[in-house]
Image (cartoon, rainbow, N blue to C red; front, side, top):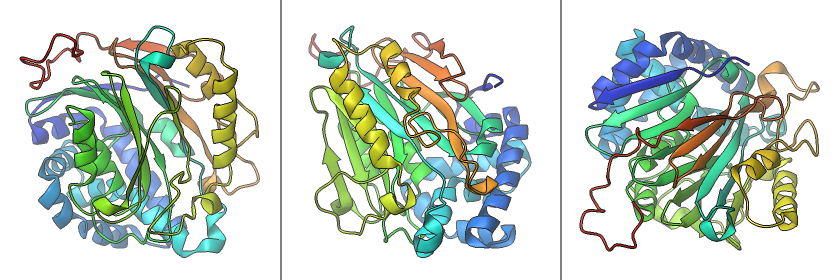
Length: 387
């Protein structure tokens, strides 16, 4: 694997987006071309129909996340594409999983997804807050991932490891927020226009504190299911399982003995929709149990190296925590661990494995200076509040 390229942007939303698009133009074009094929395979939609469907999301995004629209408009102009093209790849989750949920017999061949972990100070080797995940997705993404580094005039600076052209995925910001995520699917995932998954991820990276992240997930109706594992260097973390709808369809859980884990099925006891995640991603409970077993067996506090070892595990191969393509599946249904990302929120450091963590060495990215922008909420805070 080649090293994922780094894209650094600054300025207002449109300016950042345009710079992002210009720097990652080839990879964004690859994303658009790949999803053109994927949408046809998953939903039998040609690109003109995909663009028309995506356009239906624009009013609700404009109402609740206007900055995201400007960023996408800038990406499109930077690439030389239409806004509809960039909007389409940013609503790919809503289209793909809604199509699979509507076609239950096809759902068993849906691509696998992610394994996430957060470790609070009481469970970490050095008393820091750690968070990260394996991101498992379609094979074309090996050629589209970028490390996006954004300086904002209107919010915290942030870093995210993301598909080129998309707004955000796993990442961390200068105010101490760290984010990992997992796809979920219910029978309510019908692709009805509302706030899309990747727009919500982007909104969380604007959060100053943990409660801001929850507020972002309640900003408007959500279109799709997902789990958002959010931590803060204050030493707090929460899993927020979300199904389509409003604030009443958010389900919170907290770390157990200082560790929070999540894969791709709901853990909440009560849901307002029927969870079909296990039908779509039958490997999910086994990855979760494998993580739980490894955590229970750990001797002492967990380090970044320990987490990297956990995320390289191959039990239930090829559908393990470190996921490899299943040769029994069609090419467009095959998935793999595209990237593994670990973060130390206290040190403002990120470790990225460019591909499978079993073969790609984690490289440390030191963002101590880049993410040093002070949070406006810390001015005048008590002395024991983290910086």
